[in-house]
Image: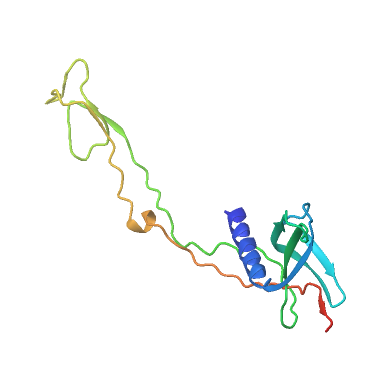
Length: 180
């Protein structure tokens, strides 16, 4: 359970970071077939310097004269207003669960020659019915009965235990310099 919660927290952090990667720089270069979406690329021209993760990668292969094979790279850059510090993430502790599970034993006995609705256990006949005092055991239907106490709804229904935690996520600023 702890690993599942830690994964959910990490996914939330990744989602927050991905929503802040909304500044794009698009550049066209001679064909770069070795680039992949997982790469981070730095670009430097006379007017622009940028470094960010490749978001879109398009290769254009041209057979017409005068136009070469090119790669169009779209970089996604982190940009945030102001600055913040990041707090470490952790899995919050489990909230208190006040339900006490009842533990009452079920007694299983052996009952021969007589039956009663309240009996639990083996109900049956001995091989040789005999007389004990004034009671003669009679043949009864053999059965094995287990009657457990009812389980209250509070123990059977799905319960949600609320838990919350707050974290600060630092959004870095990727390199972006524009000289006009």
